[in-house]
Amino acid sequence: MSDKPRTFPLTLDSLAGKPSRQGAAPAKAWVATPQTATQNAAQSAARNLRAPYGAAPVAAPQRQNPLVSDAVRRAMVARVAKQGVRDQVVLDALQAVPRHLFMDEALASQAYIDASLPIGHQQTISQPYIVGRMIEVMRNGGSLNKVLEIGTGCGYQARVLSLVAKEVYSIERIKPLHELAKSNLRALRVSNLRLQYGDGMLGLPQAAPFDGIILAAAGLEVPQALLDQLTIGGRLVAPVGATLQRLQLITRVGKMEWTSETLEDCHFVPLRPGVI
Ligand code: SAH
Image 1 (cartoon, protein in one colour):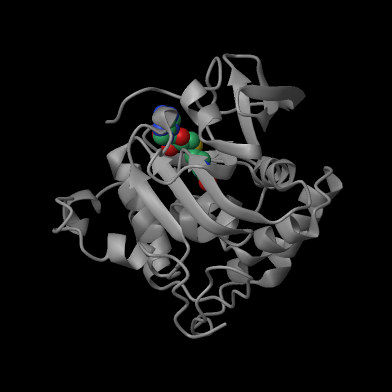
Image 2 (cartoon, rainbow, N blue to C red; image 1 turned 90 degrees about the vertical axis):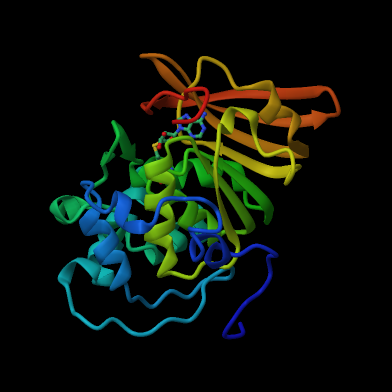
């Protein structure tokens, strides 16, 4: 891998580095949120990521925080594997991403327990098991070219996805969370990930079709727009339901034909229309 992989026309850096051109508020405007520590941590982020896609070589860690030790994360990944995630590519990606850097410092000590945790705005960072499980189901042992995530949140799953797919797009409807994800991911210089502020229920027609789509929020049904943006053979994984939610796998098998499989119970924040 070269020093500056340029496999993707619009890099995160190009999006995140020029807030004024995009009309976004300068970073300071939202620094006074519970995510301040996450941003600070992200800025001093230093890690040894080695991955097939999108990982620019970065400097070695400057501080030996036990939380960043491989061993802590390895234990988390071992638990995820024990719960049934078998795909080694997915497990390696979970091992490579420092989850604590996507969270508020006050919660960082819990970053490697298998739980969803608050990221502000009544939203959560997904549980590592479910992140791994959904990606495993979407991947199905094959290679992923273009993937779409609905619900960027703090950007954790998007980063994991960027290690298993060639190109990743992720949409978030809450502006401060979109900005938080940009900040969290900026230091990682992920060249194959594009973050989009918008309503993910509409998908991203300009980048479609996708051979994988993951929803990180639960709707009562999967929006047809997303089904239409799958390649034939493409797989969409989504939590579906209100209080009782089930993980669903939908595969596009023809131009106007999809099959659906119900997998397991799950619990996600709700999928909502529009942007805020
Ligand atoms: N992927 C995140 C999980 C974030 S929680 C992780 O890595 O942990 C789910 C996110 O979905 C929330 O941030 C919520 O705001 C977002 N969301 C809900 N409905 C949405 C929609 N229609 N479009 C885009 N994002 C949506």
